[in-house]
Every structure is written in structure tokens, then in C-alpha cells.
Image (cartoon, rainbow, N blue to C red; front, side):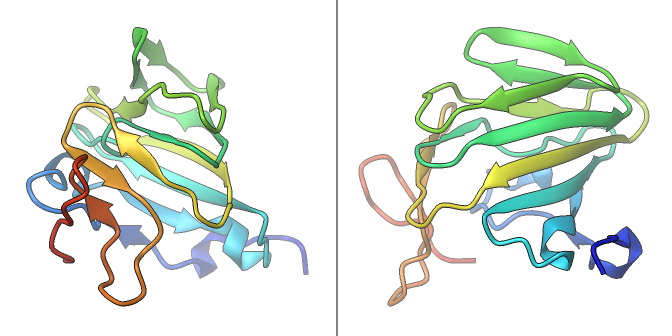
Length: 157
């Protein structure tokens, strides 16, 4: 059946980022709604940010597009161009290959809910704008996904 019941999706939390980069995202939660429908070409996630939480470290993807729609609460979108308040009904898109680091911060006193849609492209990789870290597919032999910008791996969590 195509109708999706969000309550049947496990709620995930935290991050696989190495410390200390995981700190601002530890309290975020998300549910993979697209997986419930068997979608394989793009992901659809319901992301909840309690007060003080970030959606991610500021990043960009080289092969994947991203779209974010604010459903509830208020967040601040942080990009290379600066900061923009975002409220319910606001949306933003980030094209694959655009080296514009972005993320969302909940600086308000109440939870914010975002719908995040992204393409799923094998071999996607990217960079974190404000920290010494890159990401890519998990390496089969080592399990490493995160590396320093000079290529040294971070330990797997």
C-alpha cells in the first residue's frame, strides 16, 4: 500500500560523526519515510531538531541533490552566503556539486520538524565547510566513511 504510516518507521538519533563533531547533532532524530514505501532513487526523511540541535555539520554533496521543507517550528539556515531564518512553509534546495556548505540550526525554544529529500547516488562524497572532515561511501575493508581533508581516516565509531 502506498500510504505511509510514519509511526511504523524506527526513530533514529544522533550521528556517526567522530567526536567532537557529533556534539551539535546528538539530539536530532529522524525517520526514513521513503524506505517505508520502498523508494530507491531518493530518500525522504522526517527530521526533528530539539532546541539547540543542528541538522548536520555544514556540508555539501558532490553527486546528490537535497531539498528541505520546514514543517513546524523555526530554524536558521546557515550557508556560505550567511544566515536565513526559516519558518513553516519555507524550503531550500541544494544542487549536487554546488560547493555551498549548508545546515539548519534550531535556535528557538521549541522543537522544529523538517522534511528532507535527497537523491541516492552511488559514490556520493562531499566536504564539511567549517571543520577538517570529508565524507564518502563507507570503505568495505575498513568501514571508514569520514576522513580529514588530507585523506587521513577518522576512526570508525
